[in-house]
Image 1: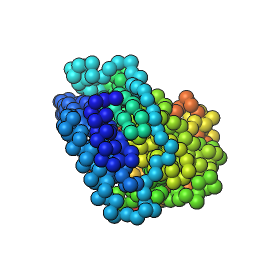
Image 2: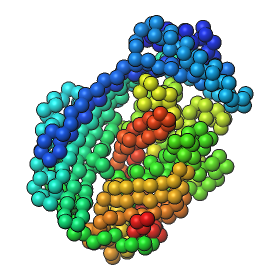
Image 3: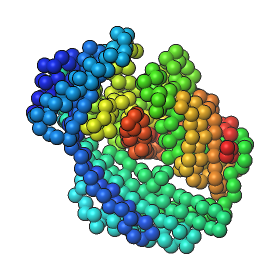
Image 4: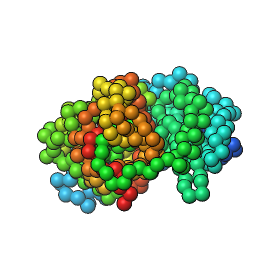
Length: 483
């Protein structure tokens, strides 16, 4: 066990903790960006510190520090104890935390990578972005070109008084490009390979090479320019919609992942993140979607931003069904919330760095592939819209009513893609929308998308989540509502 972790745990126990854990985190991040042919940003940051979480008489206490000394370990552990005892004054016995069976995980996990992104020179990374920028510049109507890359490596040590002792090194690589076209009366943009120019995964430099940003740049710029003169999305009609994978990934994040977080259901994160319409009485009996809708939460799939060896309570990575053949069957849980359901935790507790308490967070929440090819799905659709790449979103704090906008759309007429459409929006309620899904594309179209900007908690924590999806069809969707 790391000497500082052992010291903090010993001090916590001597001062009365019934349970304690320590997380030591050393993170390194690098970001690069290019705008209109010039280097726009270059940052390199490091952070090192530790946090001590204790349970005293059924109440949590937490304290953290960047000073990595034995004396500081003693001070922080004692402070966490004091905070727990002070917090106990605000609640009754029925609010006391229980964690269930001990978690005694031991081991080492490292993200599988082929090429260490931190071994690639800054010059090579910028050259890739500048080549993509030059390709976008061939389209004269694109006035703003932007590209970025982001890399991170986090080494985490976790130890607890129950005997857990684990080490993890998590690598991430991501980036993208965005082209903004401008005319006298309109502004339109196109992003690749995901909305807001950010596709990210737990992987190395090979992940960036596979994106081929320079190879897609000219197409993205051309589409942005074409959108300036494209037809407007039809206004306030009900029609069939096929969502592309990247748009569906955000739909999953907002309308599936967040409402399945069990702390939201219990109301312990309602102040910032809101509640959930998936109340306890719905588990195992609520018709969430159609028969073809199968949604899974996991922390195992390659390149997922929610892929790891153990969560920040030391619970091993797992896979949990959330929706099976349309029936709602599972939540995202911590040890504390799982105990209240008489279930084992499925390892969904994560914290942003060493200075924050872990919260119930999504790992990877994915729509399982179906049986259709995209070509066959379009051919099977007599009339509708194909919508792709998120531009805007809005959803209520129970994750029930939503509206999304996409960067681009296409008419579907007689089983064929027709004219390009701009300013596309669609709206609905979560259960009605997922119940209207009648077809999902197969594994050949399935991609693990990344959402690196999910906020939750106060102080707010930004977490990275993964969402696997392939295009899917939804019937009777209202589109073109701009209010």
